[in-house]
Amino acid sequence: MTDRYGIKISQSGYDVLEEDGENLVFSSEYPTVTIREKKTVAVTTDAGAGGVGSNTYTHGFGYIPQALAFVTTSDLGDNWPGAYVSAPQTWMDFLADGYLYEDFSVYSTANVLTCAAAVYSMEYNIGTEEWDYTYYTKTYNFDVLLLMEEASTS
Amino acid sequence: MSDIYGIRVSKEGQDVRTCGYNDLIFTSEFPLLKVHKSGRGTVHIAPVVGTATANIAHTVSVTPMFLAFTQYADINSGQWDGDYKQFSFSSIDPSPEGATGYMHAVAYTDAGHLHLSWETDLQNPVDGTDVAYFYYIFEDPIT
Image 1: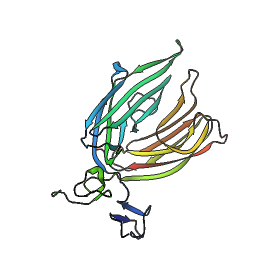
Image 2: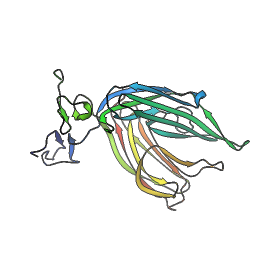
Image 3: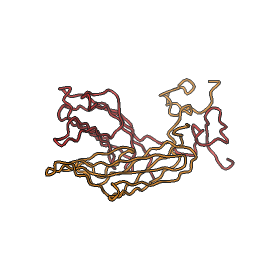
Image 4: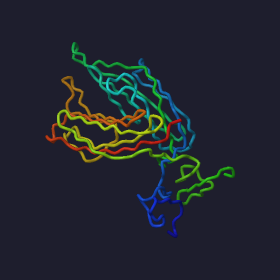
């Protein structure tokens, strides 16, 4: 222990001087998930522009932070309308004759966070034997945790 | 720094008094993400069409953030993979004749539960398969 520095807290019943891993409640030897800032970013998609939309938030950290993001899906799907889900992801729900897709993206530069969404449905048209695509205007609120930890140093 | 109190630990080689936040390992200036509840489990998914659900209760005062992972099936090979993948995802072939070879894994939270569900039309193994999952439900609200 003589060449080490930092903070350790052990679980009850364990010697903090001897433990290094799972029996610690906290160790500054490992990065932690530290919330530097919380932000809700509203994104409105445009049915006339392919059902896509985006919005930005200037966090100004000066480095690319790691982030966790969550968003509530639209009310369009049959099975899971209004679900609170993680982002980024492509969320799929069912419709009577097809599928609903909601694509959620979150990314950041050194100073600006961008949240983006796309929403469209594809329903099978028996008459034309083709998929009909419909795009929607919806507003999504992205709940974002901007973490202290840097995503990349490259 | 003079008006700041608390604890800071920097990365090795960095001056804890002057370095940027990205060079800190820990600071008491910001909250840590706290885990309200974590756990793991197994569901049994039957072949064609197999479904399963797991509803995990929580007592967070709001709809909470979460992370959840599940073992998954490779739709191309038709085999279950022992590896884990983060919820939610859909592997699907939307052919006009109807979807074939698909797997849906859905996770979302509401005010009372973390809801996990699976659905797949894989044919093997004939007795179905046990699929493991694990999750973290976080305490911290966004506001």
